[in-house]
Image (cartoon, rainbow, N blue to C red; front, side):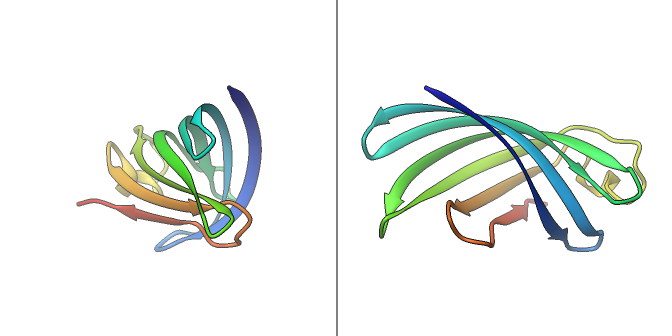
Length: 106
């Protein structure tokens, strides 16, 4: 079991630049399978924010760990992020690569 904390910068469609502060707890089920739970906050440069929780499964692909997950967004009073209130997203993250993806389900 391992806990990691990190922050990254991104671009959220319809919002612009965000910071994603996040914490994950990884449980290694084998050398080739990791179950991960996470939580964090999207923050805009003007101080708006929304919290999220996630559950992910990771496995090695071509020498890099690839995580597939589901993200649940909480509620926010932030005007620019309120479209995410109580929404669910699917994510794909490749450790060691610049771009991570999040698709919000409607």
